[in-house]
Amino acid sequence: MNTSLTSLTLAQIVNSNHKAANIFEKYRLDFCCKGKRSLEQACAEQEIPVTVVTAELENIFNGNDKTKAIEFDNMNMTQLCDYIVHTHHAYVKDEMPQLNAYLQKVSSKHGERHPELYKIFQIFAAVKEEMEGHMKKEEHILFPRIKELQKLADLEAVNLQLNITYLQSPITIMEQEHDHAGNLLNEIRMLSNDYTAPPDACTTYALSFASLRAFELDLHQHVHLENNILFPKAIGTFKELQEAILN
Image (cartoon, rainbow, N blue to C red; front, side, top):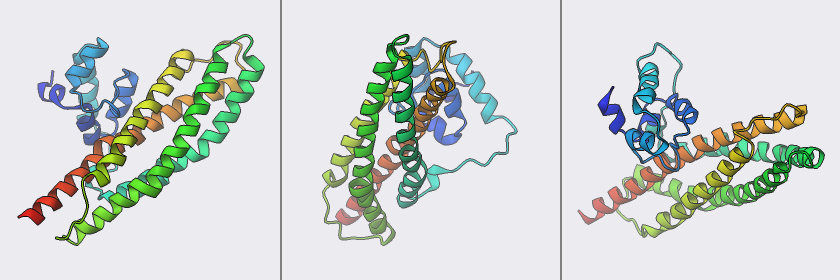
């Protein structure tokens, strides 16, 4: 067993190799909202042998796959913000209306036999409403502030007339909303038996559950980029500029 790997946080492991996310998804190890836990701690909480997970992780770290990973750690904050908006926000905005329509249709046609569909539709409607407001706040408040900070860092500004709460307050709110959205989707996953359509499911029913699974996976990647890379980078940059001014 690679003891150094077990002591790394889930976020650090995913940052090192994006394919680790697939293994963490397989074992339900939350690398986005709870990415600051060590691999050993996360496995213990899920009662999963850490040796099983490390063996699979070592396969991807030592493998011969030449697929080029996007090096998010090497992106500056403006690049990260733009990537999140153009990739994840665009996906969410495109997917939510269609998925909401699927769930409404499926619950109306199959709800009597599968009453959990009513609850799934209700919860996803709440997710949709929250995500719409959440993305607006990021795009119109937090991300512009982070981009402003990037400009100051690029200019090596010595006149930082901002308080840390300018960043920390919206970041704290975004992280809380990430947790809530993740909890809602986790509830949907449990209600849907891990997105498993029953034998009598029609095509739209099965498609709805497959789309929900994909939506949750995208959200995990989305939240990971913000909670574990973008937000710490922003706070760290702010503190570096503050220290430069004081010195």
